Image 1 (cartoon, helix red, strand yellow):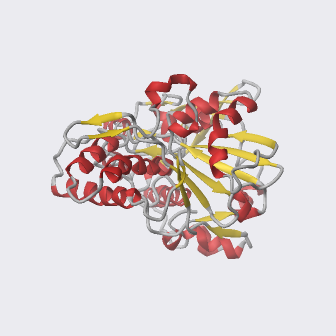
Image 2 (tube, rainbow, N blue to C red):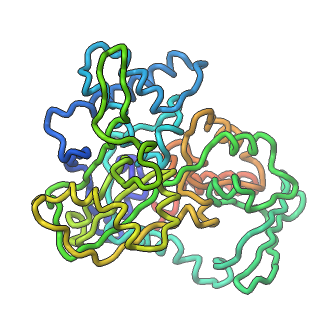
Image 3 (cartoon, helix red, strand yellow):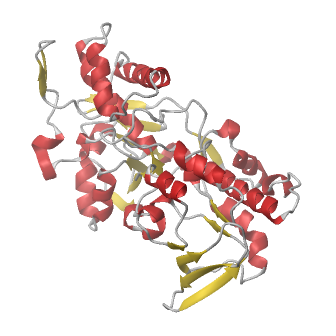
Length: 423
């Protein structure tokens, strides 16, 4: 759960007796050479860049959008009060944000950069199952309400409700069926619309189509590795890795960066040390001898295509060697490898959640949905939320918004009570 000070779902943690863990301890930072020292200030320079980025576009709203990595390199070159090492490493430290936004800084928008929030975040040790089951419980009393394995293919709708809405679906047996209703709320991921996996009759309003086309979809990936014993620090929640700066000569400064090979010089035979990662220490949270390595696109697509656990492990093994608290010891035996497969899943929209890429204008979708708040076709999901965008609580709130919009359209007074407060 993110943004816990303003996340209504947090109320369910004590109510449902969900064990949790706040992950805001001090992380360890690594480069190819090992752990960084206490005077590794590139991370603070990266934070300063994020502040500058926000100020620049607030001051120059008409300025051209640019890739985050490109803008960061320009920022450090113009910075007169940092060292050459900080100038080399700060753009690499900026790449930590990739594991928040789910896409590379080569693609991410500087104009709409979603940098690290200051609110606390927590892990629910049992996952979201308890919350989903709790919310779904009253709906399960009637087996016809929730229909699983019904893949929606087409939506017939109208703005004013002058005719019934109808969806066409295909069930698990491949049979075509229809469901009629007074209204439709679409909770499909943004990637579903990008890939035209559902058709609309009539087509969606032009402003909603434009809003969706001007809002990108990212791909955060997670890879879980279980070992027979813990070889990493038991004192830290996260291990953050920064890849080395690419080899390049800066004639103006006279410096030559040769800290490590670049992605382009290694090609397809490269390994995880060429990518920024955030690794979650599941031992400190759950007692399991597991690490969860978070990756961002385009690496996510590559890893999620891999079928062989051995191939996956060999790709990540150099990272684990860095994490050893006793570097002279061999890595312990691997027990299991699991990866997400969201980029292979059409129901996930071939990704995870929305991401602001260069040239995007996410406000267009927000405005379009507001323009059609009286429509009998509503949209919900993390991509429809301003607060909590990309997060579960944002998606949940957008569902409440769609529901209250329909209540108003039906002429039913809303009493102001939401499901969390009611139960």
